[in-house]
Length: 314
Image: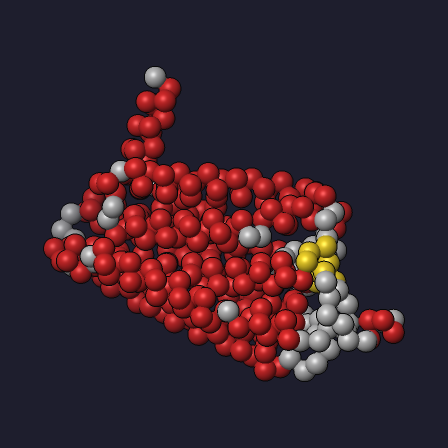
């Protein structure tokens, strides 16, 4: 380590390393990543356009789906274009303020994604377990309040992250061993004790993620209990198919996010390329899968999209 690196400094830029050990494969890794991003953008924009155009879709399920789509668009757009510049153009430098902004969007909108999964689970619970009261329980006013609470929670808990990092002195290196500005990767570059700062970030992530996950699991247990009491076998199979696809998306999100959290806390022997690759997955896969599972597999949205395409062709 040089004397220049040992002295304290406030960096103008950081350098993103990418996936350590896989630098030669960056070009090839970028191809599936870009494909997933294109599908995520097209799918989520399509859902927003269809729901906006069709007043019959202004129901709780589709309104929550729109909130999830906006979250997915912000989450993927805040990471993928910059990541592809790194993979394909070798553009490693990222401005300090841009790095902090990216970090805030990633962590706050990940929390919002978790919150909207919970809101959608609540909607499914009310629709299946209290079908006659669905419209009176989940009014447009209550849906708006739930959406605002989810957004405020994500902003309030993760707004301190960039403020804390801006106040830290940096004296080690400008190189971030990651594909994007992740909080724990940046805080490691500080030359002071950051134990309390790390503990705050991990605690917030654990509390939000575990609480949402537990409530979602509880909702689906009640949903499954109600489904198995349905008189019609076809109705049970249809409900189980819908719930099963939703649960798969939720499991992908929480399993990859949980792996990343546990790696920061306990997995010091996990190879960095494995950790970083999984950390990319929980930002890429849900925005890619959500339009497919919640959009294409939803009959009303599928019919409206197909009708629109047929009208355009004819």
